[in-house]
Image (tube, rainbow, N blue to C red; front, side, top):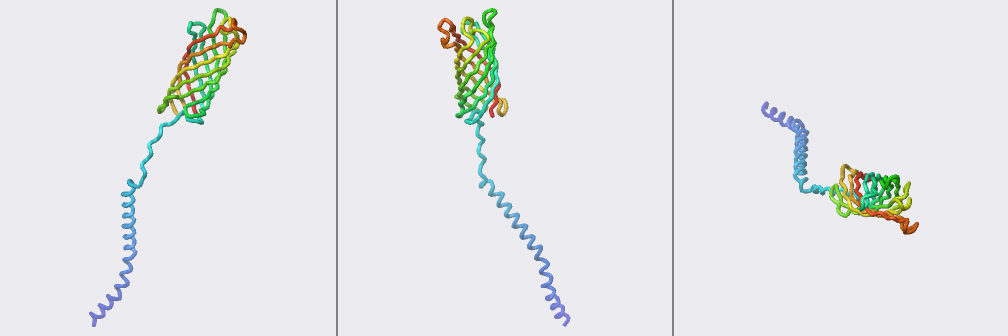
Length: 217
């Protein structure tokens, strides 16, 4: 009889002990499931993640870019004198990739015959085309035209007012974001287009070199 009672008691207690295992089992299954999902995700990520696109070279002279410049230069005629040093500032706009128009203001000191040295002021418009563009550098061609006014006749025997045309080539080198070293050489022609007659138009032809800094933004 005692054995029977003992078995019945054990049977009655069993159902009360089993439920105590369910919370642990649920936690264990959830942990294993999360670990399996994480492992699957890590294994699939290399195949599903798109490869990073290579960075494109920065275009410093793209359409819509603006540029400010400051530079110094030296001009001389093919026969030597007169010769001049100058400083220039400019503000430009790239209307197409690699192509710009720049308004410039320059001031010159002309070394002429004794007693006739002159200061000359110029306003001009320059077109520039960066024909070769690399990552951080470029090669360009430019040409321009403008008007000048001097404190004395330039050259001696000419007039205070003249026109100037020029053409040349140069290069740029990026120093920092939006900052470029640039320089080049130009042929130039200065005359008054015979506005005061042939005798008052001793035109000048020469070459010059310049170097400066350009800021693009």
